[in-house]
Amino acid sequence: MNVRVFSGIILKKGLPKEPSRLQLHNCACTKSHTHESPANAPYSRKPHPLKSTNKDDLDSNGDVGRMMEYVADPSLYELYTVIGKGCDEAVTITFTRYTPTGEIVAVKRVDLDHYPHDVSVLQNEIILSRQLHHENILPTRATFVTNNEIWSILPIMAYGSCKDLLHAYFGNGLSELAVAYIMRDVIQGIEYLHSKGIIHRGIKASHILLSADGHVSLTGIRNAYCMIKNGHRLRTVHEYPITCVSMLKWFSPEILAQNLTGYDTKSDIYSIGITACELANGAEPFADMQLTQMLMEKMHGTKPVLIDCTTIADLVGDDDNATQVAQDSGIDVDTAKSRAEVVDIASRRKFSQHFHNFVDVCLEKDPTQRPTASSLLNHSFFKHLKKRSCDFLPTLVQPVTPLRADMLQSATPSPEDELVADLQNINVDDWEF
Image (tube, rainbow, N blue to C red; front, side, top):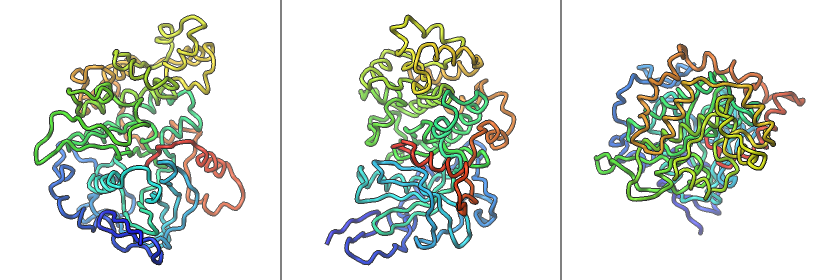
């Protein structure tokens, strides 16, 4: 008999396919020492509780903690459109209706038989996601095992990821105001993680999700690393992420160097700078560049920049260098196929000096010269943001429309249905809710 043990739950092939009634947050492995986890330590900044329109989702004090219970019975979940895949298609994200309440959720299903990484990576991701409570970190509402799959119940993020927005309409980048609101919320989530001694190690556009009401949530904590060991916080880390191939372009030079110096939370700040360029330019810096060349560029201190009318002149050379311009600039090479197109895109926009400086300080080669997440929130780039992101982001990402519940009953093709079809065809190998 083929037996697989996952987080205290025994999975046996050949037995009747009944769902496990034991949720992972009730397993011995998650209950034993979770009270000692750094994720349960007090957060110094003013707390950012998860917003919920359902009073049943909150505890008696109005805090996050106790979310609505989801029954570990797959028959209660009506699976509709697949809106994301990852990990060599071992992971699927499905637009789903929870029938007891009619609520629309996202179900992340992991096929354990085809999961390409060690199952401990998945186990650590699930345990950590259950311990983190911040409005800009995507929560996991329930997790259970059924038919040799792990199902995680997540809130639906109807706009998908920021990478989807770039793919769907904003091929040459989002507006500066949209990037500012998104990055401010991302940094708030990163500040929270850093206060717990956690390095995210996975910040990029495909790991930034946007809900229908404009709420920004950070995901992709599969590579997260906790610096708290045996009750002490490490000053530096020398552990290299196991599942890191898709993150190399966003990694800081000190992570890629893998030397005795190590790295710390400042490595996330570098990834924030790369992601800001990705959102503003339409593609990540070093796009289409060979990984060895990208590594050498970072080791030599090459700084990616925002591409606009103030920087394009320094990047554009002769005709023989036209392709190199498109590659190094971060402008989507699928949209800008010639130097003339690159110049035209850049000449029609101008980012503020505050934005340029924000990217510059984040991408310092020396991590000691980079600001902390807390100090970044006080950067002049965010000074003009007076309201919540959800008050503006849905307007700033128009004409893209979010997935809606009424699409589930649609009998004839509609523009929304075509959007769903487009989402299914997106090649996002590392999309993680």
